[in-house]
Amino acid sequence: MNRLVRDVLEALKAVIVTRDELLEKVVASVLAGGHILFEDFPGLGKTLLCTSLAQALGLRFQRIQFTPDLLPGDITGGYLYNRTMGTFEFRPGPVFANLVLADEINRASPKTQSALLEVMQERQVTVEGERFAVEQPFMVVATQNAIEFEGTYPLPEAQLDRFMMRVSLGYPDPEEEQVILRRRLERARDAVVVPQVTTKAEVGEMQRFVEGVHVSAPVQQYIVALVRATRGHPSVEVGASPRAGLALMQLSRALAAVRGRAFVIPDDVKAVAVDVLAHRLVLKAELWAARTRPEQIVRDILSAVPVPVPGSLDGIAGGQVKAAG
Image (cartoon, rainbow, N blue to C red; front, side, top):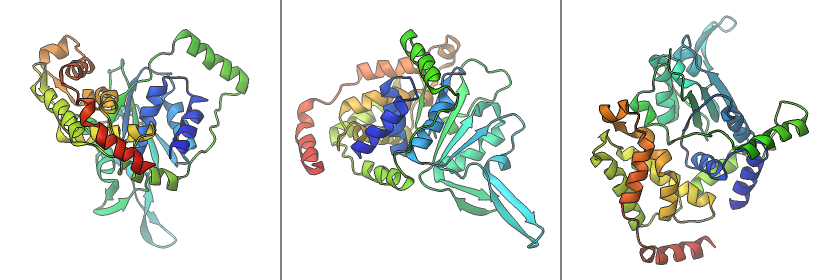
């Protein structure tokens, strides 16, 4: 698994110029079976990252461009009349893929956005009372513009809660931006081809391996303390739910596996806490008006909540390393 993960990361680094830590989190989200929300400015490579990830993992990729006139049936598919057979038959929509890119998801109406709720949570689509399971592995990567809100429909909290993490690529520094230019000159074309590293079956095996990554009792208590601290924070109207705690644990397990461990340490939890918890917080009105960011609140909580001492983790870590070896 470590060899495959390293090869996937190297394949992504060859075309995506961004922080190594971000690529690790994206791969970890795939292994954890979670969905990702990219909130960023246009032109930073979000679509390129998604297509490259699908190519490297050998997953079937579909892109849905969300627009105001998009209908739920355009996403899920529906029944069409077959004149030859004289019957109605189901034609699956673009959501029937392994990796679905929901581009500019906040541009579609709430009714259309809600078409993704069932498939994101239950990995199935219900049409005319009949259920159709999507192929595994399955994940949704959605994007939304961080600055343009005119004519958009903000995602409701219930749908935001379905995303395991929210991240952003950010602008590259001058050296990274020059690397982007140099690579384009070397390719002599716009198209980017990423070699396939794994298969769908191998991705499924890696996801099952993550389920065996150990989380000690002190680390579990640390996760619970972080989640509960969001509910009691004076700046937060609505804190993180138990689903957020589960997402934080699952992504921490996957990140530990990506980093070559069969057990979770507090640093794994701290590395993904902001990405998992911030978009789930509803701030009080006066702080929202003052443009206080929930990411800063989560960082404050990370600074205030005591971290489990290393001594309480040594025996478990050593046993897990021996077992993994």
